[in-house]
Image (cartoon, rainbow, N blue to C red; front, side):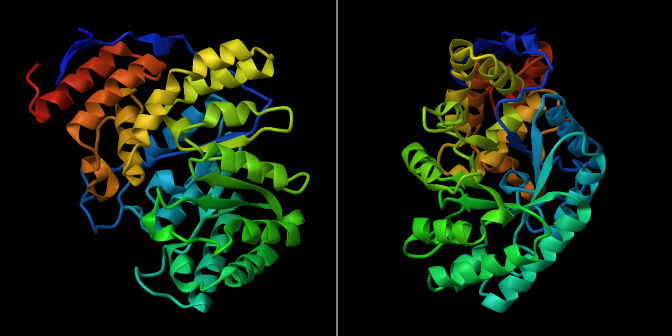
Length: 373
């Protein structure tokens, strides 16, 4: 009963994911940006306030902690700006930090503001409100890119002013966040005309308040160059869901830590690969991570901002939630052909631990999209 009929023919699940143990790793810091589980019986249609299944949402975070990952809460993967409103975001951060069984960081943005133009003063106040909420909850803040700031700032100095003020208000070190326009087209031109100069100037002026910077630009060479230019003690957290194995492994001049959306989908094999790195076993590291890369590249394929649909689809197939429903109706963000390919790649990557369950759910979904079983 582990064979299903995909649009291009029969496919049998291997069940390879069952072989991964739950053990810690130590040589890298790795956060998984977690998705949220919608309440399947609530009105989660586009434009409605998000209604979450809190039990399943928090259970998934315990799954990540059990494999040794920190949780990056209320990030892009949790549908910030794509269905998760700020009231739900604030409650999510509060609940996750109360239950934290491992490291946790949480996103600070300006998405409580209405869509459209905002003044720099309004952006400052919105950022400050969310920074207060995250610090009050007890999580380390991640200063996310702001659509409102991207629209309002005219040059790099205005980014320096806004972020500098936030860093001055922070109780301790924060993680900066550089999200590319492939993840959110509204962030085009972020940091001004010379973004690298702006970022390095910001970190240089506030080194004691910057734990690290998460870079999600899908450009490995750019990331390595930036990593080598950071002040001593400031970490580079890769957010590159295309090139993460080579960036985390690093080279003679350094390596990247990680804050990745794909780690939510590949937690078990990713943890095994990182344990191999702990032991200096580069061959095992490459062998385990290798099959996850085609999966990640497909999940994050263009239009990249719909990657959340694939993350939730995989969580459902893997048994981490009971349904394939998303806030904002985003389960319709990818085509049946895209998700059918995802089934093959997920099985090859070893992220589906129960072949019978995965096949049963895939069969039910395939029937709804018109592929007779």
